[in-house]
Length: 460
Image: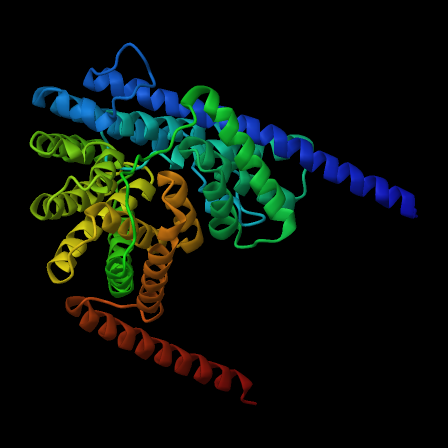
């Protein structure tokens, strides 16, 4: 029989173990994200030949890529296609099957393979550095999660505690790579765990803060986006209310399109062929539009600086959607956080410019910031995290929380309304209804046969 004193000692030991794992995981996730971030900058500088004297420099990737020759851009994307195609084909062919973070955080879900996950993250960072239009944030999240898996197994944590620590490792990786401790914490709680209880909140906040501070030693303590002086106005507040649903509707179709592209992406011998065609095509588009290269951070910064006009913003919005979906369809892997943020910023500029014709006065950068938050909130299904990320990304004044929150609320409402009613385009609604009726007819016939069979067996 276990005495009360022994129970207290066991409880104290369990809390001490969790505290040690939390601190260790925060340090490990920070080091992992820092290493991946430095590798990303190194690949970018070598591929496009800028700031070769320092890995971390004031020259942005967009500036360096735009200053490079058109031939160099094309060669970099051809190399990107080769590495992506061969690398992911080899990983799927010879590596241990990958396990997503979401599956790993489902309690008794499958275990994330260590080496395959690390290789998967390295491929993402290298291809994004070479110009892939996908995001870099999935790699540090996966590295943080797989490190948490390894630590949890070594100390023998319970399945529930392991699930929490895996989510914390993923959130810490996001926090460290982007310098967003609050955003990483909310991502862990809102997206991965779906709870804000103390047992999850404390380790989530601790790991994200520790990882962020550790990453400062290599990546520095700098904001992701520098903003000019911006102010809100009644016009901007009304615009955020009016256009919030538009961003939600656009995000719904963006999620639908990306999910379809990923579902049809090859994982066999066709993967190198697709990448060998799609990425050189992106390189050709990048000759007149270098803004298409990379995850879109530089393009979003240009939008926040109000340096994009309506024709260019609309053109880049369309092309950005094309290259993002093309990379996913080809079989490349990466995040959609920064690409979604960029698409929302471009859509905000387009809608804001139209609004300014009726009620002029607001800066394009203000429209871009609100649009990026509203689109990101729905496309990633994380309203609270999106608001926190935009604030930490830009260090925007707290006054902007009013229009940002209003736009996010409208966006989320329409997004979930479309999801609830499974909104389909006109050309698909007929086929969906027909397939539904056919399936119901088959089910009715099947149930009828089952009932008849049971009745025959029960007869004397």
